[in-house]
Each structure stands twice: as structure tokens, then as C-alpha cells.
Image (cartoon, rainbow, N blue to C red; front, top):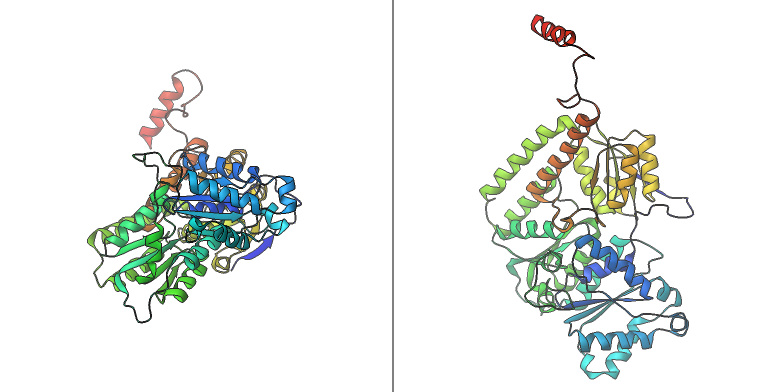
Length: 465
């Protein structure tokens, strides 16, 4: 059990943490035809927009209510009203998702009340989906904003089934955590469909931020799950959450629709995927397809090959709680020791993380801990690259933002294949570091100093031995 230790510093030096509002905005981007709207100043939106654009390398739909100093003091009803009307009339969205920010939460704007007044004033908006989530950025973190937003989507958009209505045993709802990439969701979709099940992902970033080019330009999200499909999620027999952060949304779905719910806290590693595959086999009534038996064997072989390189290594890792728990636990199972762990917010998963303590802090804290404890591997997002370089240890990028490499949206760590590839990637980093800094190679090894005598002596010695 890890002890959670809050930082005592007055400020963040090299921030690890991202804010609640952009976590909520990203969740809304998993809805088709959505326009996320941040209720706050223009800066609150522009910084989040830049972060998403650099990470996904895609056009990002994100709007602002553009609160000025005067509007903030007097109240934001007019700004919210104008923003909703402009978006509704100009971009023709299927839904508008609204997240609050620190400045409007400090003022105490009653956005739910504003929405009621706006619906009453404009008949065309009476039944239009407007979902508001309170996500002040002066507390909690990115993962919390995502968690609250998905739970609010369930509460606001999913219809309650009629009493006694039959459930569809082939349908399954999937509530993925913010630590999962579009590539992860595509892999999960394939696995679930191979058992004859029909998954509905909420949110579905694999449909909107997977890097595909649409036939026509649209100012809103270009894919994802539609509001109409979300409304029917109560017909599914099962709901699964991926990551402890999705327990709240899974329980909300279970309470509202009567669908059975189960949360898988991890999907990176051998045992978690065994549990997931067996669950799918049980609920579908089908045997495990041969391809997954083969993939499991490949993962076991990869673990055997890589444990010589990862076993005994000291790991420094900084990430949102569910990502840290998922990847960190997998590496612990490979024999790696988690000696420096820094996160952004509280989570119950740390009770099961195999390390002594987890610090809620920044990347300066992670670098300091890694140096003090002699770490061999450094895992965090792209802002950790300078720290790893100063330490001179292998660095692997996980989480968001990942702006200095391509393919962040397709990075894969779930399922047997994702775990296998991640293990190979990390083991190869360690091997390369050992070659570069410890072992002589044909390019760095030179027998003797000068003349031919040393070469002859070397040859003779080798022949003698």
C-alpha cells in the first residue's frame, strides 16, 4: 500500500498536472457533432486548445464564453447566452458541452440556472442537448474533470428504460478512462466484437481524434458516439468501466438503467487481461478465440525475454492516477521497482500500488526523487524529457501532452498486444542505454593503443584461451 503525500511547495516548477476543465472538454470531444464550451476567460480556452492541438496534431473544436473582468464580476448569463446562440446558429452542433473554469467558479455563476433561463427564452433550445459540468481548475485535476463529465453525460443523456424492459445481451457499454488513447479504444473495440458483442463507448475518442481525414469540414467533432446512441445505452445488459475513475459513471449507469456494471481498474498486464477476456467469454457465452490464446502466449514469451532487462531496475514515473497504477503495476510484475512516483490527484488505486509512497507534486519533484534514488527508467509526458536528459537515464513518454513525437493518439498499452509492445519498447530502451554507456561496441572498442603489437597480442591471447 502506497502512502499518498501532498506536496508542500508553494508553486509548481515543472507542472505534471493538467486542469479539470480540459479533462471535461476532452470527454465532450468523444461525442459526435459536439462543441465543447469553457465558461471563463479566453486564456482558459486558448491554453487548453494549444495543448490538444500539439498532442493530437488535429483540428480541435473548443469555444469560450470570453468572460471579461466586468462580466466576471457582474455575472456571466449574457456571455453564456451569446456563446450558446452563436454556436447553435453557426456550427449546427448535435450537443454543446459546457465546463466551468476557476474564474467563474470563484464568482459562483449558476450555470444550470442560466441554461433554464436560456431554454425558456429561446424555444429552439428547449430540447437541445446542453450539458453543464462544474470543473473548477483551482482544485482536483485532469482525471477528475473527465470522471465528472462522463458521469454527468450518463445522468443527462441516457434514457431510463421502461419498467420490465428486456436487456439486449449482445450490447455492452464501455466507459473508458482518460488514460486510454484512441488506439487503445480501437483495440478494445476489436476484442469485444470478436466475442460477438456490440460495444458502445462513452466517450469515444477513437471516432473523433484518431487522426482520420473527414470527407467534409465540420467545425464540431468529426466522429464519436452520437447523442441518439447514448440515449439507448440503457438497453445494454452490461456496462464496464476501464480505470477506477470510471466507477462513478458505471454506478450512475447501473442505478439509472439497471444494467449490470463492472469496473476493470487495469488492462495493461497479463492477469488483468486474463480477467477481461474471461469476463467477455462468460457474458457472450462464447469460447476465447484462438487469436487471443496466441496473443497471450506471445505476451508471456515477451515477459520472459524482457525480464532480464527490466527486472531489478528502479523506476521513476509521473502520471495521472489510473495511468500510473496501470503501467507501474505492470512493470512491478516484470520485476521493476517503483521507487519514485508522482501524481496529480488523489485516488483509491494507490492503496494497491506496490511502492512506499506517491507524491502529489510536479516534475521537479519526480526528477529530484529519481536522482536521489538512482533510478534507471523515467516515465512521464513530454515535459519530463529535460529531466531525464539531465539524469542521463532512458525516457519513455506516457500520458498527455506528448507534443515532441508523432502518433500519440495511436500509442497502445491495453490488451495482450498492447502490453507486449510496451514491454518490448521499454526493454529496448534499457538495452540501448546499456550499449551506449556501458558496453563496448564495434564502433567504440579499439584493441590496444598504437601499432600492431597489441592486435597480435590480442589475437594470440584469444587463441590461447
